[in-house]
Amino acid sequence: MPELSHSELLELDRRHVWHPYGPMPGRQTPLVVESASGVRLKLADGSGELVDGMSSWWSAIHGYNHPVLNEAAREQLSRMSHVMFGGLTHEPAVRLAKLLVDMSPEGLEHVFLADSGSVSVEVAVKMCLQYWRSLGRPEKRRLLTWRGGYHGDTWQPMSVCDPEGGMHELWSGVLPRQVFADAPPVEFEESYAEHLREMIERHAGELAAVIVEPVVQGAGGMRFHSPAYLRVLREVCDAHDVLLVFDEIATGFGRTGALFAAGHAAVTPDVMCVGKALTGGYMTMAATLCTARVADGISRGEVPVLAHGPTFMGNPLAAAVACASIELLLGQDWLAEVKRIEAGLRDGLAPAAELPGVRDVRVLGAIGVVQLDHAVDMEAATRAAVREGVWLRPFRDLIYTMPPYVTGDADVGLIARAVCAAAKEG
Ligand SMILES: *Cc1c(COP(=O)(O)O)cnc(C)c1O
Image (cartoon, rainbow, N blue to C red; front, side):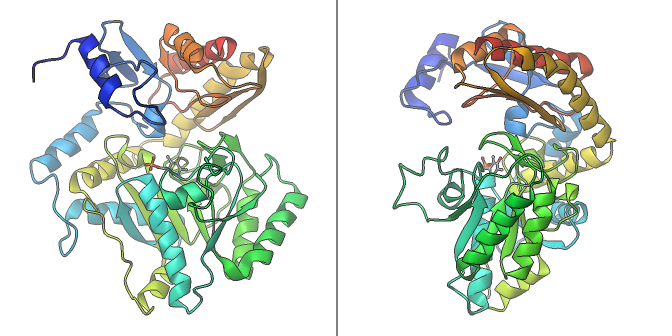
């Protein structure tokens, strides 16, 4: 195939390639990225570079083309990029599991390596349902969550996404019907804690697990809540024989100012999912961690195995880069970088609060959010950000940023100005 001109590439893209949440053929013209380095995306049309305010959907925490991650990939590539994981094992996967166990909340000891965040949530759900089945309680097979969540786009994860944003209407009768509590308030309110207690107690007989995103609800609405609710969930779940799953796919690896958001509450879930930043944004990999109790329960059941095994499970290339990314993170004062970005976003986004049409401005860790009182005009907002030299991807009524931790102060300021510009024009 001959090299494609810019316009040929866009035309073929429009005609043949699905994009996330897109129609076919595509209606929006995407920007073509030629390469990426540090915090900058280089565009192919010669129009220059954009500072990435999205970390490629919150994954590229160390920025692009990082020499340490590149070297880890190159080194592993020269040995093997993949071998099957059934009956075989290898150092990158074993080292990664050990790193994850050591850094995650006390008590999580076993690691299932999955190939995407959604699959890691599927595995978490399977673990919980199978745990109760193994204990002779197969009726415990529903999930409880709170509204406003997002857990991925495959079926089980979809069933616990926010019912309004999650297309539940379209799939009623197809999706498993789960139990929904109200969305968690920002601050701790005893009446909401009571609501959680009451819901869990009422449904305990049929609940396998409660699954939530701790502290930050991401793609469901970029909302923050008090970590104290996590302690309430832990207590109530323990009291009523319900497992607790934390989906840390968005919050893991320092994003909220704790290595895992569970750390804000010093709570250990029974099952925890990580993904997104696991490989520093280099390639797809996720993991489901569980406690010895969950693993033992499953392994003593009538079907004493966890029947799940993706083809690319434990992919050595991804695992090697994940190890390098975690060591890079832990080998620096990551908290200082996250706090520095937090301060920069607080300063830089403050003026947005004065803009007409802005409902709320909030910052937590390396996450900055401007919420409008109307749906964002995506095209206008994106154009405004690009004009400022920044890549943003707003959704619904939200313009937000999750910059790479290596974003310098000047670039954090630039991103904040772009968010404000997008809020003004979106
Ligand atoms: C992105 C995300 C997922 C899904 O991960 P994929 O890798 O996109 O399948 C699940 N849960 C949360 C909290 C996420 O942010």
